[in-house]
Amino acid sequence: MDIWEKLYLAAKPLYKPAELNDFVYANNVVCALESKSGKIYTGYCIEMACGTINLCAERVALLNMLQDSGEMEVKRIIAFRDTPPSGLDGLPCGTCRETLMEFSSNNKDTEIMVNYDKRETTTLGELFPNWWGSIKTK
Ligand SMILES: [Zn+2]
Image (cartoon, rainbow, N blue to C red; front, side):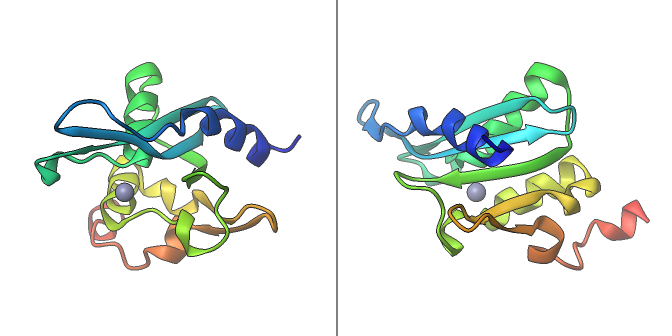
């Protein structure tokens, strides 16, 4: 079992789309990441009636990592719905890309799963070149 399968299997059981109440819908996107130290953290998305409060699965996993260990660097990350990513569907949104970069500019090297079956990955730096914060981190 490679690290990607470990990450996939860690996140898969979280996929349980559900309306938690009249305002909160959750668990329809799941994520697992490997921190720099090698720990695995997971998260699921939380969508709320007031949309600006929404949290993507990736950011929930990042916050779980930060709270648990204080770590801010991510080696690799995978996010998906009911099936593993098979193309552009697994890529993080702009807010999650920004969050990863602000956590650490070293996250430009974070590997992001693109196509699970082919083990095709990209990096945050490839998705997000010329990040504005590079001015501060040079
Ligand atoms: Zn996102």
